[in-house]
Length: 72
Image (cartoon, rainbow, N blue to C red; front, top):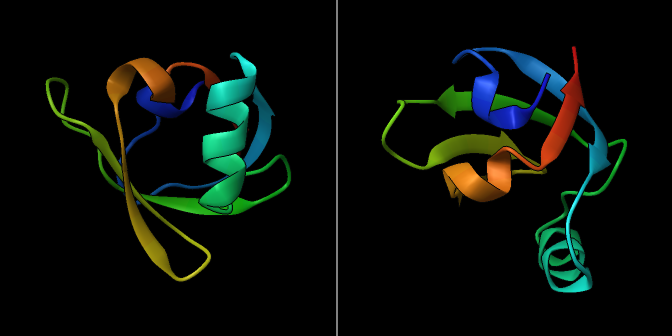
């Protein structure tokens, strides 16, 4: 399942991030690397995905969230 499909309140672990080096570097700087656990705070269909990870609330665009594979 990818991050854009996760339901609010779900706790998940990042399994894999698809994308170019720019995206991987940006996510790594936010602490979102494979193995990191995140909690989905809000996931409305037309808005960015809000998630809480490593003591930080992050807003990820739907396009970028669809490139992040998570496992529950």
